[in-house]
Image (cartoon, protein in one colour):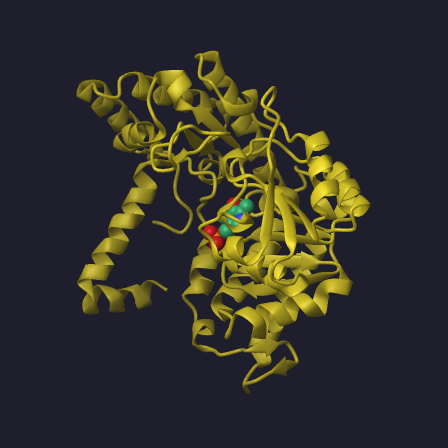
Amino acid sequence: MKSNLKFLEENDPAVFSALLGEENRQKAGIELIPSENYTYPEVLATLGSVFTNKYSEGYPGRRYYGGQEFTDEIENLARDRAKEIFKCEHANVQALSGSAMNQAVYLGLLEPGDTILAMDLSHGGHLTHGAPVSHMGKLFNFIRYTTDPSDGSIDFDRLREQAIEAEPSMVLCGYTSYPRDIDYARFKEIADEVGAISMADASHFGGLVAGGVMNNPFDYGFDVVTTTTHKSLRGPRGGLVLCKKKFASRIDKSVFPGLQGGPHMNAVAAIAVTLRKADSEEFREYARQVLVSAKVLAESLMDKQVSLITGGTDNHMMVMDTVASFGLDGRVAEEALDRVWITTNKQIIPDDPNPPLRPSGIRLGTPAATTRGMTGEDMQQLAAWIVECLQNHENEEVLERIRSQVEEFCRRFPVPGVA
Ligand SMILES: *Cc1c(COP(=O)(O)O)cnc(C)c1O
């Protein structure tokens, strides 16, 4: 690998220098975007391997090109490991990323125009859950459920009423900015009552399910579970579609040839590597620590009068109402934290009166910080810096002091795969 980078250094100094810049950026600051992580050195190596040269349209044993001895081997490993760790009957590992994985499910199991009941975007749902700007939002009839304003949890009574009224073909749970676990039993019951397919999009918390610290929708009889592989699972960018056997052939045909051409076999190989890593005591300990650190960070922030949506967290993330807490919109808060090298993302909050590029909050999460070895104690320090930064967002002196403290602090925590 090192030797391959030598070629880049010699032949394309511009890209090489951007790569070094990004490595330094990832080392120098604290990554709190809940959907990001640092992957394993062996995953970086596998992604940069000769598997990227290979066309493997089709599935193991049934390919359209020759020379598949080793690609079949890695895809079978990835599929078997996914089935084992998520306790499911079938796994498709070829989706090029999370969005493609969800599109493959809708297009494979439903007809255009069918109704899908999914979480409202401002309440935590993802773009791929029928955002009006997305192609899926135009192709399918998405009906949106919301959270209960009193405590921020999913309003199941209302959801059941909506399901009975709309008779959806699919009931979808899962989120991109919801800091709680999901009552899968309740969801499944509602899906069954209206005869809908039950789907959970575990993109954010797939690693926490794999690590055994959050509920697995398959334990409640769910039909389909999707997850990205690059978030809490700590792998390469990609998506898994996991499902019951009865949907297996429709899902596989939907991914290829329905939606995609040749799979990225370097990513498939890296997914196999990731899933083996995830099936270890070390990873289970990692997943536990992600949750512990999120709790400590949330409590430390709330001790300082910060307002968090739903009043805390049960998973790896939290959503801060920056308007209520500091009188700042999410964009200003994100930019202030960027200046002290703490990376977060601006975030819409439930029924946000402000537009998405100037929303009322930011989103914080612990998967990446935990990968670097930060623990609960460090989260208390982090909360203190975040609050001080946002209270003094125009005070250059304070920002500069925090920035140099963050820089110093980060030296203690190596980034995997970056020397
Ligand atoms: C991240 C995410 C996706 C999409 O993943 P991409 O790899 O960015 O396409 C889908 N669903 C949810 C809930 C997500 O959080």
